[in-house]
Image 1 (cartoon, helix red, strand yellow):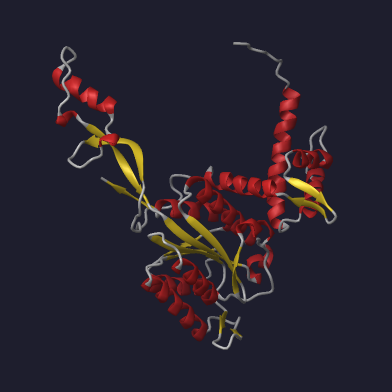
Image 2 (image 1 turned 120 degrees about the horizontal axis):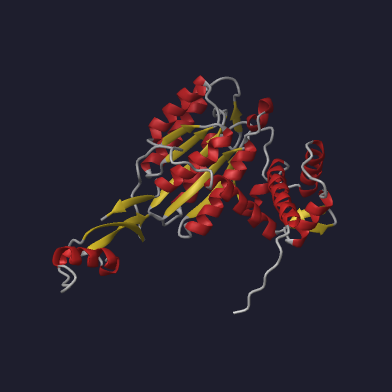
Length: 364
């Protein structure tokens, strides 16, 4: 075997590490600029110069070169744009940023839905019982039991020595993620849409990489609701919209009707009260002042319709306004779902823990 040794270049290593930090900041700015690469780079350059982030030798040209060398961006007549590889990189980094921040105390235990097919072997073991698969036998633990019982001179394995691995029954889950894009998501100087987009991309990456039998669809809702392609998530932005929660739930329910998975669920990220509904003739009735009882009643009717189909709704509220809390409690009770009140910077942890814990159950 041929070994080659090189002197460690501390300066080059520091340069690479700094470039990676700048790239992470660029990704964050990219979400805030709705996928506009040139604008994100302008903001990055401004911040880097103002806060001395470049160090002694880097510039925005080095960041651009890194992105182009990695084929994360491409030059077009309109300027620099994300490539498919760049979109995947953004999803992966969103996933890693949230997943690595999960703490053991991020959320409590919650009711677990029925599971579908698929066993995952766990490191924990227990005594063998009739009907257990022989493929689950832990040979090391079994041999240890036999030696402990009969000694090493004559090893004889009996049924009572057998140890098998515990298993976890993995569900197959179909999810629709609803994201509020009404104007309130960026009101009062607080950016709530960027964390929502990051969570959507991270959840997409989680499902595609860890749970390929699951499905995820994303629906945005303002005055109206529409399904958005997963690769368009970085470019999603808010508008001068009201909050038509009912339309979002109706669309999610129809999307989930077509799914074969045993478990189906709706995850909803919002910061506002329902302030619009679509009438039978297609017109949109709006009332942004307070909680309109007609709008609320129609929205809760939709929550009940989802419950009757066995579709739980988990609501992630990005505000703790007392009036809205009262509505969410009524809404959640009608659906028999779950609700969390979260700061935007904690949204990912709450949603990830809820998703992972409530798609599986332990079985013997």
